Image (cartoon, rainbow over all chains, first blue to last red; front, side, top):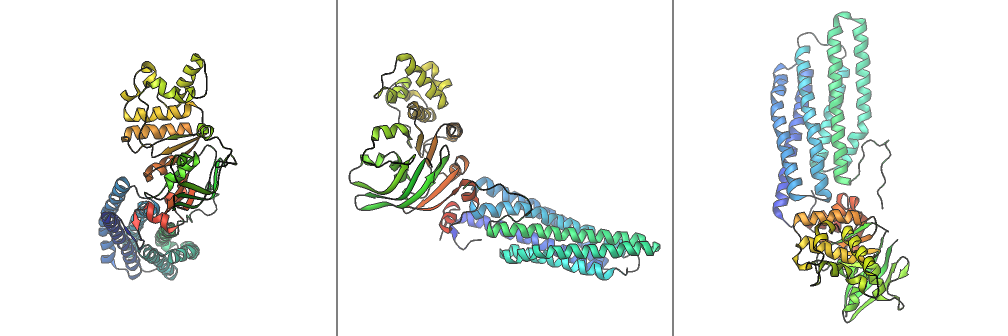
Length: 231
Length: 249
């Protein structure tokens, strides 16, 4: 938040409580993604099951964050950076919660894939997993530090993640064609790639919100013509 | 621009209350002036219809125009100026007369209107101020019998009866309850079709709700003028941000 304090110190406390709560939720979502990727790559069933169990906690944090934001809107009618902070949080919680859901999906697919041997497409999937996880970590770091430079870096890297996803997908389709016995597992891995790519998309959404919070610039949907400010 | 201020300085004796105020108010927009007490927003408002002239020892420097004509030119007839620029004050101030006479007051000054035309103009003004339905059956009753919100709408009716071009409002809802405030704010949205409105308000939510453009005043200076949407979501100046978010540096 800004360096200066509010005249009403309780308002500062309420905003700080929301910031701490959101950070807790962001860190929880990040660790779910990290553990799901690790469970997949290291074939760690216990870790995968832990990810699935921890989703309820993330859902609880989401409901509490929404309640805190709505209370601030109703009681404080914030303006300026405070308004951006509260509204941005209302959007970010959805992205964090979806990241958690996708981490659960990833963990479930990991458990299925552990039933058989590894696939030759493992390297591409690992690259995509590492890149998606890095996007999530950077987005969370950008949010915590209110650092729009880190957020903009995440936005720039999104294209690389799309490219990694396409490369992995093409490899998996080729394997499915060439080795009919691997068809089912290759298909499951395409789902894994889709989850990882969507997780990175949510990290991108969070980063866009960080840019809006810090710079008051809406960088979403750049191609769209915007209504001009009547000044 | 309907109203244009360029480098306007204002003095109460030796004390300077406005420092180089430069801003423009477009025709038929609602323009809000916000800022802490003593920042000069009401002084600026009262310059627009030369209400400050009634105080001794005041002086003005710079330019303030209405439709391009200098408001402070020696040739300006202040009574005629105030017909073009009406004013509504913080506290409802009806005269101790009937509802009808309050609205007809300005029309009777310097005009000899036939009774039927006078009645028509009073009805039109009361309708314009959204008070007709509540007042039509008791036009002869004392204005003092009306509620606070009704009295303020009566003052608006009195102001618009002489068909001004600009309405100045100095904290017009600060003495009203939330329901009367909501009615007045709704009325302002209707009035904007015919009038240019400049409003001083301490209520930031009100400025955000009703106005098209907002100017933030601090220590007699204009810190920032922007579209209301922009000023309340992404102010450009640190002082504006601190004021609207209730912070101190």
